[in-house]
Image (cartoon, helix red, strand yellow):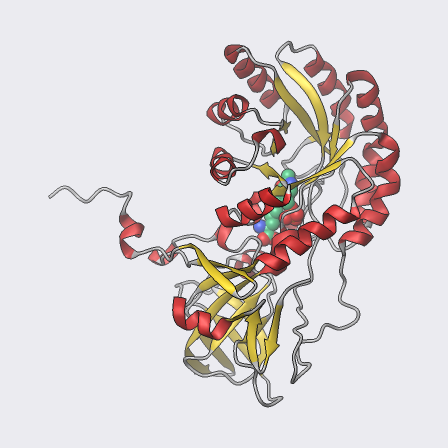
Length: 431
Ligand code: LLP
């Protein structure tokens, strides 16, 4: 679901003409649709309404304060993986009591800050981490709420870099060891066993791996509830989105999805999981990232040059792997559409590349696009998740601005970085 469509041949995000917005703010620029984000959140909420549950948005997907603020106001909790993300949740007015803290490498300082803030749960990934949390909690004279992340050894069938639920991944504690680790933890005076967590991977488009993981964990979950009165079971995130976007258009149907495009909507996801989860009588936590924000974002770009090489046409744009690393890192596929709807059906296979000095710097390869020329504006769709949050200053390129659209209005929610911002925290060479 998203609110990007052509109106009168011009691409709109909700009620905002993106061509005009690009004129005003320049490119590259990220644009987010608040309406899309909130609708995605509400649909997921509604799908799980029969359960005692809480959505803890995984803020790594998009950690802009305005996005966090929207979700916090809608009632969302948060899932974080660093002290930096905790700082953002607090800055956005989010509640630590509705926040879980995941990640394999929590530092002493991060654990201490999270405990002092009143975090709902530290999701523990190893026995040594458990010992560290016990030591920090003892020093602070606190009881640390913990859940253990259990790795069910399930193949999520997704890209190797974003698959996390196999025993060969670095995440969680194996099902064979989990019972023993809980027993040890139960004997620690400064730990409170609050729940159990799992997360098997990202961009998963079928229910099977989720069902398989939960089924494997159910006996343990029931035993933990009985023995330690745990209160929650977090089933992680991972719901995939459709990247091959259909754009509603008054003119052409060039961007329609094939009927076979795999998709997983919140209702299908819930229908598969509710029968397994309802009998548990536990609070169920969900940690969606991509499925809430992915389709809510687009990256606006301008064509700088069209370069003909032997047997290849390169469309060189003003955005690059530093703004959007997904194509380079995961072979991520993002729909690219012109802001001005083309008048003819002509298509040309081109590589869309950025100015960064790496052959890996591409946005799309062998993509059939309408004929393009310098100055044409494009939108790279479904870049709301793992776009700006993975951006860098590589090649000393300032970070792109972020703009939040709500109905007919828009607001810059992160300014474009200036060249001074690039060097502000560096010391000038002594002369
Ligand atoms: N919970 C935990 C513990 C996670 O590690 C993740 C994502 C999530 C929740 C949220 O998963 P989601 O609902 O967004 O799939 N950068 C990659 C994705 C990395 C996902 C890492 N963990 C990409 O651009 O595809």
